[in-house]
Image 1 (tube, one colour):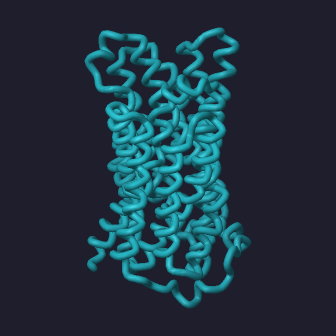
Image 2: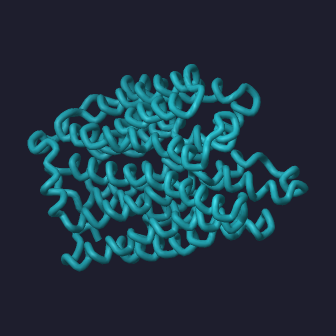
Image 3: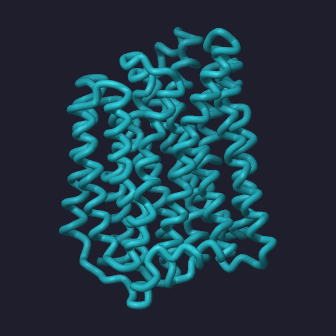
Length: 406
């Protein structure tokens, strides 16, 4: 199999495997209404997937230093699929949904980064940087498809059938990965030092990218989790315009699809002007856009949609460069442990993003007495504040000496 074929195959399997990821955010307004959830509970329901991910990702990724990542990837796809099917059958309120989504997120921990490891272990030299970026950018395709497929199937057949179909896609990815990826053992020198995090923590260059990725994860997941609900609020303010547009779920899917070219372009910019310089620019602009997004609800619907789309370019523009920077800065014998910490912190803060926005929304609504533009402005501004930690981390890493990943 050629390098291009391998990159395409792993990216396609990744997309199939993580289709369930945005299923709850896509239907969050429906779950809030049907299950009588507060905004804080809704934030937990949207974010608990990443809590389960965070708990398992360190062992799931670090163990790829010792075993073929293909095996870990297949197990993760299967667990994700089975738990998504279980959600379709058994979820009937906050607590059942909470538990089932948490375990599904734990299965997802064995999909994304182990899949990336399975890809990079089968490539050499200069092929890796763009392969990493394309693989991470394909994540945005999966998110967009997750929003749109969940919404469209749910519209015609109900949310349980929608979740069931997404679970089947994840199981299909497990089967295809098992039969289409050739087995491969990790390098011999990588078989020692399992869970050796001290060398990773001492690697200042890698830690800059890891902390930056954590800030990125906080903002990205908060945006994805609350975008549909925000668009429901915006469209409700202008029913005439809303009647001429697709559903908020489909609009959210179109906006999130922008993440694919944005991540690719961000990495190309990083290759031209340097990773840290490009990332600091992108993340600073993203933070500024995030601080204002909720307040745009006063503008015409078309202007809000355009603002969301432009904002999402910056939200996703740093993803590929952060991950490829971490991979380049990682010491080869500790690459699995470096990837594990990168993913654990990134998806750990992903738990917090939706919850903090939900808490801010509840607090603002209690203070104002109703859902309002000011309340959404305050609630969503949390996203911009979170991502601004990223440029600070990269400045700190740079002061430790010239980063070798640059």
